[in-house]
Length: 250
Image (cartoon, rainbow, N blue to C red):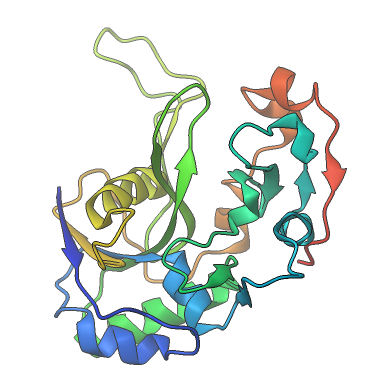
């Protein structure tokens, strides 16, 4: 698999997303996936709040989350644990890095925007098989360091199932799916970087274990990624704390 980061100019609030793609996204070939950091979509949508006296970051996080834990539950690093868009994430995605004096929120209508990007780049490059992923940084339990997670995707199947398939000794799997979207997101986020690299786009090619499709994600495909708290591997931990309802509107 080859992941190539794409350098751009600094992106500011109110910039036009499709003009950015026109200017910086290279010519795309069949069977490639374009990774886009969620932050530049948010900036183009003006999903920002100026950092100034009177702006309460903690309140902002509460408003942007589906559920959150009290700040006192994790005071050491100033993070608030939240569930937002059915993802366990710090601070509901609210972040000020590379925000030029703004808190940057997660994009609005992210799947709709992702679908539009897919259609636009697919038609512009006159190719049949193209994937899009929108990424963000994510922390893993009991591990230092961030990796990438996919917030939305289009153009390929998000999971590769091994259920009922044999391993090398003939034992059949009964519960294993590989997350294609998060595997790609982790590779892209690592390549794009977290600091001043100024590479918020990446093109991924020579991808194994991917099945491209010629349609936007269906309701069932979107639903296939969701897992109830009761069925989650970490259910004993997630259900042992008191989650507070946040203010995010679907």
